[in-house]
Image 1 (tube, rainbow, N blue to C red):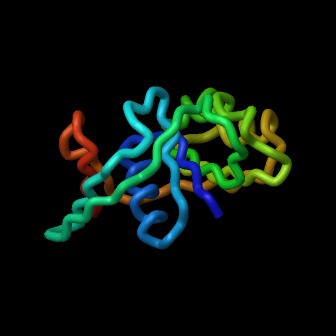
Image 2 (image 1 turned 120 degrees about the horizontal axis):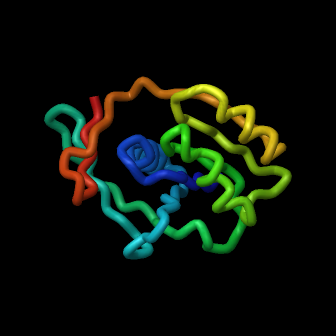
Image 3 (image 1 turned 45 degrees about the horizontal axis):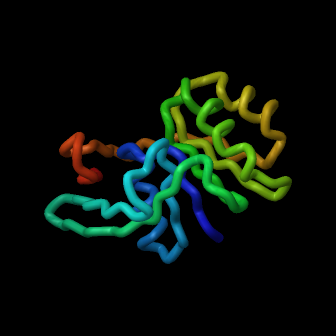
Length: 136
C-alpha cells in the first residue's frame, strides 16, 4: 500500500525513512513542500543513510488509503481535516501522536478505521534547517 505521512517533523521523517526502506511507496504531506521530493539523512549510531521521499501538499489530489499522522496531538484534527477530501470509506488512519482526548474527536469527525498508538522512538532533528534525523 501507499503510505502517506502527515507531519514531516522528526517522527514523521523517521517513519517515512523506515517505511521506504521496507519497500513501501511513501509520501510526506507537508504544508508548503519546496519540491516534489525531499532527501532525508537518517543517522543511527555510526550508520548514516540517505533516503529520498516524495512530498506533496495537503491540497494534492488522489485518494489516501493509509494515512500515518505524526503531528503534535493538539494539531491532529486540523491536520487530518486538511486532507479530508482525499480520504475514502476504505482509508485507514494511523495516529501516532501522544496525548489524550484527540482520538475521540478524530474518530467522531472521520468515521474511518482509526488505529491509535504512540511511539517511544528517540528521534531528534539534528539541525533544524536540514532534514537530518538522528534515531536512537
